[in-house]
Image (cartoon, rainbow, N blue to C red; front, side, top):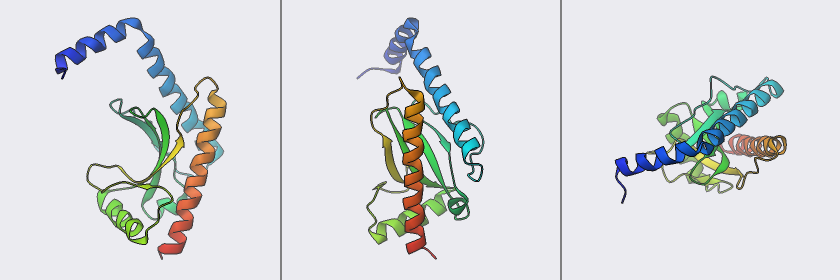
Length: 166
């Protein structure tokens, strides 16, 4: 097992090559452009604040319709570094609300999407893979896939809420 010093030396060597920085800037620009495009295209959705860049574990932004915001829920469009894929997560404004909806979904048996194992240690409630193997060579097409998948996910969540939560 490598020490932190070993890992930092490896990082130093990778940074000397320059591709790591270019790739990271490219990913951040893609996410910012997608966030801006969705905010303009869907003015009724809440797309607050900036982009959460994370610790190279995840990068995300919120993209939430009023129907979910009114229930203290939100949707995050997430790039997950470990799996190198885009996901949509249903999450909540705090852990108490997250726990409430996590339990409701678990007890209902809804299995349309992956229910996280529990509230502790997780930011989401349910997760949906939007693009499993993103092709960054065509950013417009990739953005459209993420948009379409996000809207479908939101629609499914809204349908479940209408059926199960008064």
